[in-house]
Image (cartoon, rainbow, N blue to C red):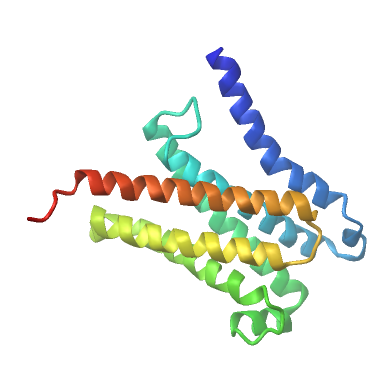
Length: 202
């Protein structure tokens, strides 16, 4: 019974991550795009999926992974997310430098651009601070990490929701909603645990 539940959870996660990619691959909009642009777009879709996995890993919601292994995978997926962002931004820069300059300078007329740029810098900031984690200390790291994670989730979700591209609308919105739900659930759990262990002020 337990093995069936474990299989079901992993199958559901795989479906949530893979269905948007499969539907996007079938989009007629890709017929007019070059391979670099398509690679950049799918790197963005993959990045959105990785952001869903991250809180599930750190909270231990994915069965079959020990706490230690879950945290190790969390670190590796974080590095993969940074790579996905670099491919996404780099590919878009290659195909249209003026558009990317406008986006990075916050002068783009497209409403989704600033959200993506803010999320990008937040992802890079987490990656840098993760290297300096021991110097920050556990408490400072938790505060900074959670704050930046909230910015990343909000920025990426709004960015993805506003982009009208190859992603199919329903699957995209479902994935975005799950990203928000997972992040909020894990953050709320962390805050509740912190309140329980913090002694009340007299």
